[in-house]
Length: 212
Image (cartoon, rainbow, N blue to C red; front, side, top):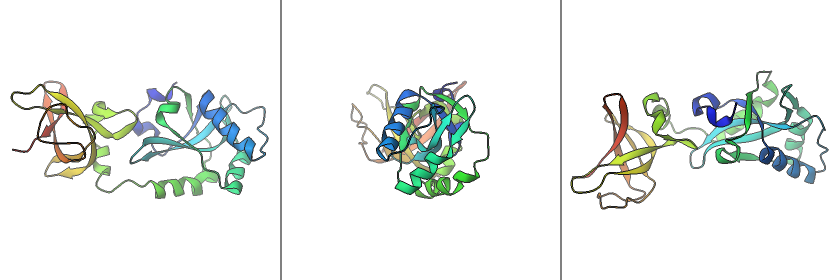
């Protein structure tokens, strides 16, 4: 299966094996600069998925692996720490890669994964917004904290904008407007906005609450 076939809920804080030319060649080039001999048997990369609040879904390289056998190359993992190398991929660069979830013992990676979790911990106000499954179809595939929101005002054509969620307040979502609306709705890029999740029939959409 392809990475893009899975939701952020499936991937978040999981160790996954990715098989793709860009991911593999990038890691190979970097580690070869540090005189690491890449084993002939490896053809994939083992990564840990996390969410960067600004850049969205990301994958930290842990080591090389063999996709069919799920065998990790632990020596390349040791080399990372020895040389203090950090390599990561953004979602868009690996979304078409083949993926397998790493089902073996991950204890060797616990320390590294804990460091990533600490460095990219989720704001306590944002976390509840990630638990709202009803708006998953509105989320930007590269960053689950960004959702498509409708702007509606009498006399103006309805628009969709992107809002980065920051929390929940008085039953409505709060967030930061990420792009400038084409028409004058009374709000602008980088403004803090409130968003109401509305249901019409079987459809669920998000509507920005405009200033009066």
